[in-house]
Image (cartoon, rainbow, N blue to C red; front, top):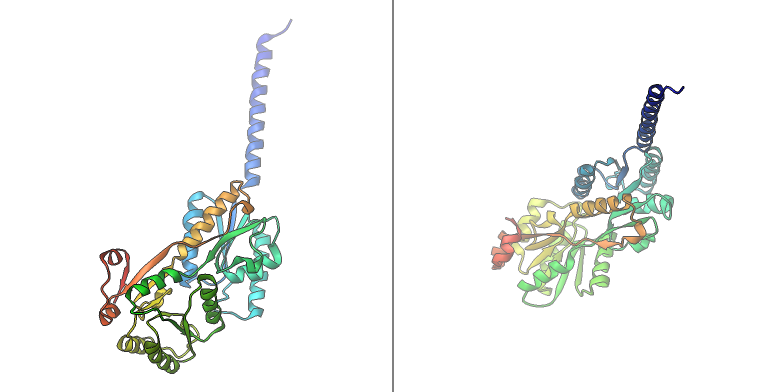
Length: 327
């Protein structure tokens, strides 16, 4: 005779055992898988304004998504020697191997040149780059595992603004006499088909001489980088330029707005936000090869009210309403 009550109890406890076992398997699998992880490589250092902006952009997207984010900095802005950079790259490679991220975001050219290209180009690990100057194809990007955003100066926007206040079409650029600036000006000509006269200087003395000459030979000018003019004294040069300026000027660097009439500058947060948003798409299943490389689109508009007064320039209400004002 079968004991139905006893058999029912066995079935009941059997189901409980099976459900409990299944729950343990699911929990073990989830624990084993863990949180998704992103490694962010900063080519430079904390405290460098451009890098801090990109980092802020990455964090603003990744942190709310509940993904584990680790940041490693190469510090190559303060230590530019090739030997140091190569050693920094090896340290980053070791961090990648130890941390085992699901995806890597790399900011600026040194990360691309010394980490991604030699060790991870066409690898399985997906990479999203940002802040690469002008052209990613020099590194062979994109690839099946690599996509990103290039960094392009807001040169056409600045030039168009300067033309509005200029009395002629002769454009000039004054900048530090460095390899970087020669390359930058070459990109302006190649990519934007601009025609301008170049004034390269290595010292404050040369700058003052070329500045005075440029005021007579040009109708408007772009103020390039002063990195490389090692004897530059801010207060002295600020007073000199404001006293001797005669034609409209522009810049793509916010820190130079004390010397220029108008500026349109890149927004570093855009680079970080875009890279992080793309990273989430890739972690969600989209292949990097299906995401095209793009360039930055956002910019901050600046106007210098003191220089505007000196040049008798009156800005429109639309410009004044959207611009960051500098005295």
